[in-house]
Length: 432
Ligand SMILES: Cc1cc2nc3c(=O)[nH]c(=O)nc-3n(C[C@H](O)[C@H](O)[C@H](O)COP(=O)(O)OP(=O)(O)OC[C@H]3O[C@@H](n4cnc5c(N)ncnc54)[C@H](O)[C@@H]3O)c2cc1C
Picture 1 (tube, protein in one colour):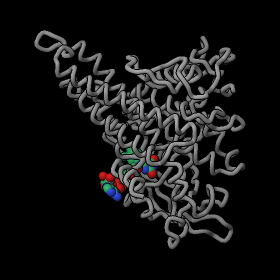
Picture 2 (tube, protein in one colour):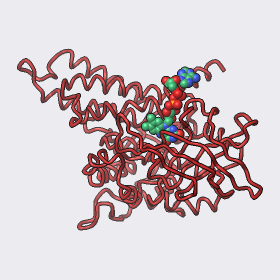
Picture 3 (cartoon, rainbow, N blue to C red):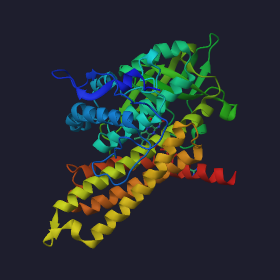
Picture 4 (spheres, rainbow, N blue to C red):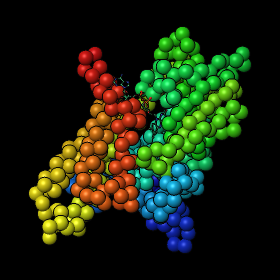
């Protein structure tokens, strides 16, 4: 089976004399096919130093990786420092990503998407963003977290209304679960929606730490719709830009990921039409549980790619930097540090790749997604910390990418469910 036109026909070469976001349309190379998952015919490691083979990608994926790299090099990296200073990316980069086919790769072509339900494309985008250190891009949230909600739960009318803009980058999305008073304990949320006689809703509450919050045109809001129904008392309501009573609060100042817009949102008597209920009333909590596994796998993918990139940066640094008349790389301690980090990354990558493979085949368990998330983000924390140490004082200077990696990476163990919550999930799966 050929990969859809949209992905397979986009090559990584910008057309001469045009914007880099306009890609030459060519016929896919003969024999370029998608799956079945098997040995790679065009293996690419996320970094330049190939430390191990990975066997989950084929030539089509490699071509997509090239496309993503070229996109990031031309459309993102040159502007990222400015976006960090601004506290958010330029909206134009979303439209450029849409034009390059990077958004909604698994959305059907009739709605403007790539039409390929293959999480490996999502993984490649996330890996390359980590590799480039362009932490301001909220694309993984759009593709990995929001897309499954819209694809599985939206009815035909909603899909027609939202998905084309989602894929073109005109509609930026967010999901609002966390509140000032509660994050891990989602059943404790205080946001409520009262059903009206005509089936519409009156929404009240406030949310915090919402990724893409300032830019968002469409927010999936988790609200309590029946306070007496326990886990069956939550619903998902889609709030759109411009609805009266929907306000954005502060753009939050974070330790890292400074270009990623993270905001407070508030809802005061927002009238949400019946047509904006996503899925079934009362099923919201169940939908969250179903979709969180992909979000957690996405965090694991980004984490291990970030760890590999930190090691790559450090390998280069210790070979160049001298102390006591020799390269820092020549000290046995350095070699042991590098060896331990390389081992941890390699072993973790094998497990994460296994999870990606299982997810593509529809077999990833909630507990395995939780294992991948906590373990990979912990490896990232350890690796980046050790890499900073090997950089000495320069490792503490934000002009060095390793210092930015240090502040950017810390949150991976916190969002998407904290690592402690991941261990609860795994523990419960063991005890039953
Ligand atoms: C940059 C960033 C982006 C985010 N983006 C989003 C977003 O787009 N949408 C969204 O809804 N949320 C988002 N979040 C929120 C994030 O998911 C929550 O911060 C996270 O789930 C933890 O919730 P909390 O902050 O309320 O911490 P708490 O729940 O208050 O936890 C505090 C501490 O207690 C521990 N703890 C809590 N319960 C248990 C338990 N049962 N057993 C053991 N330990 C426990 C936690 O692990 C943690 O160490 C984002 C957060 C950040 C920082």
